[in-house]
Length: 362
Image (cartoon, rainbow, N blue to C red; front, side, top):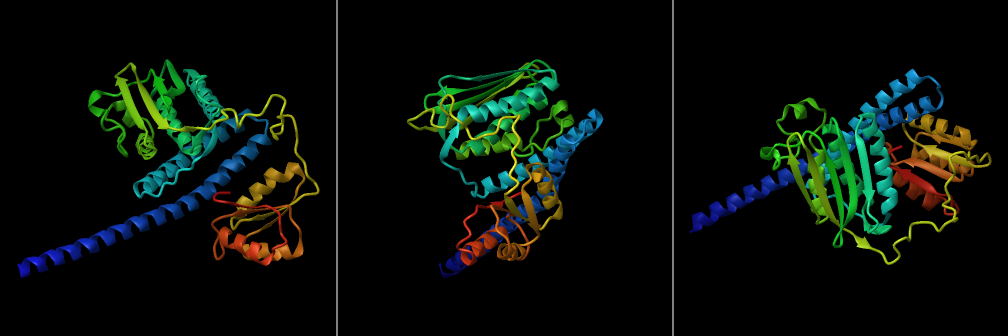
């Protein structure tokens, strides 16, 4: 009995050591992905922003076409980075979900508009139906719902060569029901159980020939499960596929709380209005000179006075010299990051009341 207890304790110690090593490995993986995400996103965001400036300042159709091709590739890479990070967060149980009011019409209308353009370019019919029964305002995490819906719609766009895509949003009981139905290549029955697994894209020839990481549907499944919803797939080869997602959402008493009354100002500029503020000053804080250059280029038409510095220490020095109406600051900077800089501003400049915006990605 004594020896059995010693063996048990030894095995238990070995198990604890192994668990600690596994936790440390997962933590290192998360930290690595977070750092790599920032390091890759920063130049990608600069590329996308610079492309937008090029389009705004050229009348050449050929240049616009080249820029569009560059944007497509950049967004594919950005989406892959997002997918990898999301999956890592979900697996680690670190995905945080918000509970806040969101405008159903605004969210789904914007997504439908974006997908309609892509579908029409591919010669597909796109049908969008937001049922009247859906409340104008629900309580939940609209960014997660956007990601779930985007992945489903992107999947249909990718594997539908002809015909149509039907995007419907309704209610089923108290759940939000999102349905995406297409006339694509379909999924063979033997692969239906695998489509929600990471990096699984089916063995059909067209799946192997189509670009993609195989993470989109895996993330959909993980997010839906985390929200205590459900997702199901029905498919027939060469006829099409239908995905249905049910998500619990809470309704607030005033269904149209986020919608302005007729004639009420939304605070937004009309398309033909030009915002200018020649008397305003903004301080841009970012260690990446390209980011500072892009921001200055975007703000140039507004006539806003712009100062830019590369560190939190320099930002504090500028506050000693000038007054600003807003400070725009990157989160990740060497030596003193955005959060620490903001804390120093609040502590050392209590009279400074202008907004300080700390951004995860500039």
